[in-house]
Figure 1: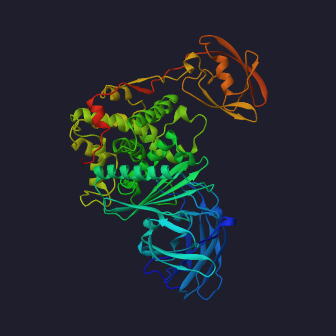
Figure 2: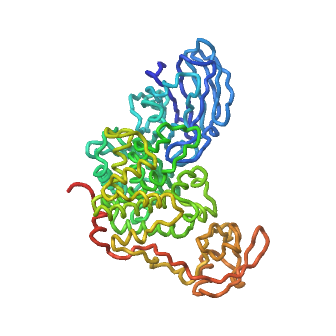
Figure 3: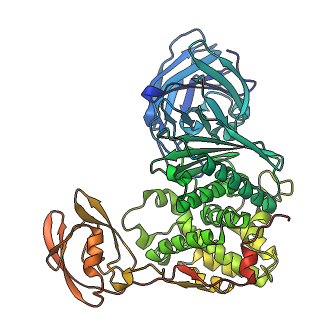
Length: 603
């Protein structure tokens, strides 16, 4: 097989789905710059800030020349392989297998019904032995899969041909390392739903982990809402001239997640999201799509300066994830309600859900947004039972901070300029594909300077500093007052009669403490993992029974029996009133509120 024009040729064979065995490899043509060819697996992907070890899934590695000569090789460090390259070698053929059973948006998954392929966790990349400039050349991908499957990918599809063994081979291409690594390939028998929106083609490829056929009317409703959301994005940022966009939707039993790529996304949701009359789940699906779609601008084109050139072998830290993830969450949901994909009631219900999470922790007194962003690698993906007491999520708290920034900017600009306009301006100034870019990539100073240049933002630098750098709660009450809205306790909150401030789980008939809310009276006399046994001598059946036993007993003292590491203990607790945090929006809002949730699209 001839070499790619300037880059490498990568191979993947999905014909062994029964064994979850993805056969993979790459052809590396000479000339070689060293007698040692060192290959390494990337260890993380942008959008998921956690080091992983994809090489753990590899087996049956081999390396040969074009004549079939077996080459000697050895493992290097945790993620690499070193191959001895004899003189006058024109081609090194690397082949191996990957066990592809993990079902997530950031992993390879292969069975008899589909393949979800993540290039960073499929292919080795040369670190030594060839001219590194070739990694920015035109790469080719040769994919083999069952004949009745079809691929959906942001990669450019060149050709396909039928094989005699009941498979097909697709040839695809990408220019440069990042475009190939920051992509996905989904191959399955389900039809690809394609539609053109303001001149840009969009593809939707769905797959259900259990083979369930989604309700056609709900699937069509989602397609319609996708179009509404996409047009709302275009109204703010403009219609891009980028290639077609691909959405891969995985429907599962319980799994949820999303991961953005340069011109595509994989979103995973419980299949109930497309069941009739499952409004909460559908609302979440719409939000997830909008969030990942927005990342085309805010992460993929507009990047932290530290991410202009990705080092996917080691951690890449930035203090700006509150902007890139929290800001995307805030604006993504604004796109939902402004476009009409969400109703006003949808936005209010989702805001209530977020406020419940916000008020249950007290980590903002111990960690700022910039600290949370920087420490994503050791915090967000490694949370524990005491996380809410010392850490925050730059997603949730960053979203609420962006809302406060938006309202303050609107207040000072007389309603003419908000945080969404600020994001569009930052994208224009610093995006890697912007014709008007003053420089590529942003740091905090760039965002702050753009804010100060904005209508109403001249003196807002200190406001942003406090919001991002202080270990303090954002003033959400003040922000909502701009819209003549208030926060009140949830109407259905019955815990006001008595509250212990814990979360529990049931395991083999036992009720175990898992986490504590801020102010829990049990925090000082119990530990995570303790089994709750009885209240005043009455044996507990489950968590619901516990709530009944303390209902209406505010101010009373109870004797709690529990087991700690297998040893029986007793604790005396005075039951406090539930904190009754304000989480529900009250009021119809004023004209400013109605303008805030109104579409930006031209009539």
